[in-house]
Image (cartoon, rainbow, N blue to C red; front, side, top):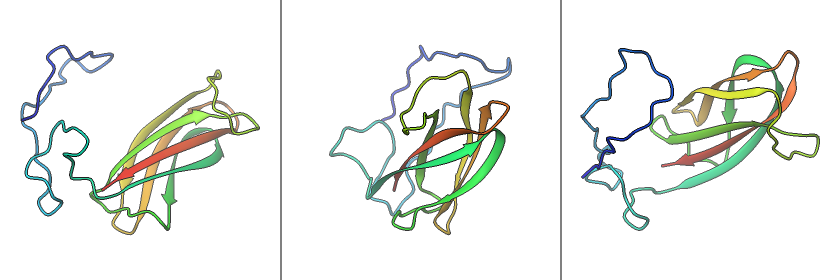
Length: 133
């Protein structure tokens, strides 16, 4: 059974934002009768893939990423983080803001990521991907 925390923190949302009470169960055929909070060992995850990509970019953009050895499907669970990196590839908290705006996995094995890098010229940023099926 899904447990909900009534003390969720809301940082910024429109005045008419509402939380739905309904919770969609896991898709059938993937080894789970019901989705929700699960402990390790009680999961329906069949594969996990982790990778990183570096872009030199600024402003708002969208990029199609592909990883030939990853199992990416339209129903994959994809998590992406974005951070500024230095010349050695080390993440740091600089003056530029970085945001992942949308992540869309596709049936052809690729993912489109819409992002924003708040800087006036190209800087190096690291996209960090975790893909679960």
